[in-house]
Amino acid sequence: MRYDEVLKGIVLSYDQVKVEDSRVRIFNDSHFLNVRVSVRWLLFCPQPGMKLVGEVNYATSTGLGLLVHGIFNASIQDANLPEGWEFYEDDNDDQAYWESGDHKIKIGTLVAFEVTDCRNTDDILSIRGSALDEDKYGVVGQAEVPFAERHRLDASATAAVLDIHTPAKTDATTPGKDATTPGKSPTASGKGSAKKRKAEDDKSPSEGTGSSTKPKKKSKKATPADEEVDAEENGKIAEAKSAKKEKKSKGKKEKGADATPEKKNKKEKKDKKDKKEKKKKKGDDDA
Image 1: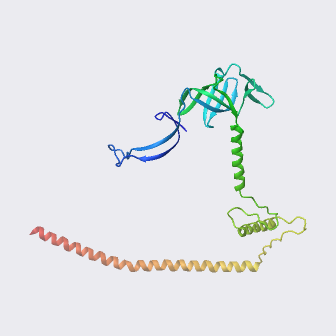
Image 2 (image 1 turned 90 degrees about the vertical axis):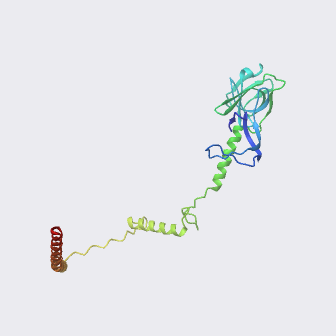
Image 3 (image 1 turned 90 degrees about the horizontal axis):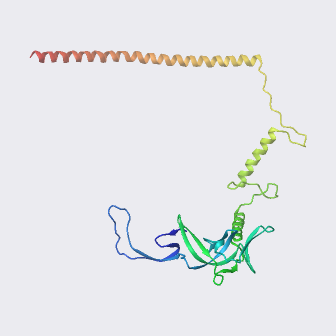
């Protein structure tokens, strides 16, 4: 919430929005449409001399800090407190407070004060007050739950809601349940775990059973007869490749031989045509 200089306050809410014009206006080359509307504002605009009630959220030897309506910051300096008020610090519960007779001002105490000044810094409103007049201002009550405690309770309630909506992980050791990953079907998870167990069994012998992994099959040692058969097969493959290469080369040569006469005929025709054109051009020049 920010302080508005035009309205001289902070907008808390608004209602009864009504369009007052029947026509929309455009100024110069602006791409905005201008229309008059009326609205009812609810503003927080404290003025000097007003009476406000704030909840103490900290106490120091230099004064008090308060929250007005649980939102807006206010402060009362020690000079603006009555003379009978004294500052104390309790070492047992680590709490500071102001005391006068039977009255005590500590965190959570509701204090009525007079507004002495309102300052707007970077659209943030700060209020300064005074409680010198003990007949009008001073302690008016105590919050059942201080603001800091309420904030802590709200945070814990949010955490509890998050815990409720967090999916619980299933235990693989629980009978009748499969440990599955969210978003994956139990069948796919079972297949993956089965493959993983199988891979682990293949890598290392099982413990406690005395059994070992299945030995790998040894490669058969090649004999002289097998080497002769392999050499013969390799020779046949090499002959087939050579024959294929020769056939391909022969086909290219035949194609080139067939193409040569055609090229010659085309060249002869072109030469004859050029000679005729030259004679014709020469005759035209002589004429």
